Amino acid sequence: MESLFTAYRTFFGKGDALYQLFSPYRICPLGAHVDHQHGLVSGFAFNVGLKFLFSETDNGKVEMCSLSFEGLTTFSIQKEIEEKQNNWGDYLRGAVWALQKDFQLKNGLKGVVKGCMPIGGLSSSAALLCGFVMAIDKVNHLGLDKMQVIHYASIAEREYVGLRNGILDQACVVLCEADKLLYLDTKTSQYELLPFGNNSSQKLPFKIGIFFSGVTRKLTGTDYNLRVSECKTAAWTLQAYDNTPLKELEDTRLRDVDESVFETYEGKMPNRFAKRAKHFYSECNRVEKGVDAWKRGDIKEFGKYIFESCDSSIHNYECGSPELIAIYEIMKETEGIYGGRFSGAGFKGACIALIDPEKEEAIRNTVTSKYLQRFPEYKETFETFFCEPSNGVEFL
Image (cartoon, rainbow, N blue to C red):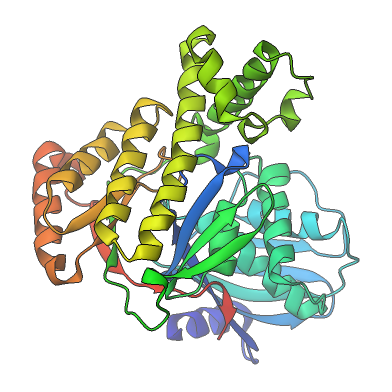
């Protein structure tokens, strides 16, 4: 935290920075691309993320500088939030915009935020949003509970920033516990925190491996939102075949349609939409089977479903860059990797894996060597990290 204190003093001079907050990044081992369709998901937060250092202002002014993103963000929390400015500050403005729907905010804050690791595929945006919602909650004494933090962070990203995702990312950032798997129904928001092998005293038999391809992209500049529309259209198409009364497309989800309806009409659907639906139903089934393996303490079977999830992401959801697909193929061949897949939407720059801790260095060397043989142009930007599951966002 020392670099944060130094930056705080540089930007804001002397004075006490009263609050320290850690907001973790997250991975989703099973449940890829289904939360926006109200599907079943799983997740871990892990011990790398964003650190906030801030103090309260009584004039409503927000001043946040970042050691990871470019520029200083300033605005008044007491005024109506204006249009996006297409920089990282939109996430902060979006959080306030969402909270202003239900609260009259008075106090602002000034502070510094710093992220660890390259940005790409680990939900740094959710970490930023959830952390900032909790910071605003703290200085305005709103008394938000965890589900409310998730709710306002999600509204900010969907309705203000413009990424049409579900609540998976925010739920992992807020709800996770270090020694448990988060199992979440994104339609009902019901969730469980499951110890491995149903034994809360058992040490987790894996570490989280993160492999950055060296390629970064913004989700709002990819086909992410198009895939969401394709899934909704697939659901609409199935309902039309089944003579189910239709709702507005924006309010339609694949979770609204029973899998048996898909099995009946799959062959009549345009191939693009059939593939999106096939991924949704098969992925939700993998989550359920993976959770069962987790409860039984079978990490190898759990990992097998993670590999299968990525295969479906490639062939049915049709996401993934050549670089990410290469890492996936290398992971499947590497001893000590239980399972792995693209992280996040599959349009960004990272893959994740659950790995045998005793084979950490061998895995690092193998994946790095094989990947750079295929893509030597990323020699300076390819990176590998190994992390531990952690609790969700919390004040330090």
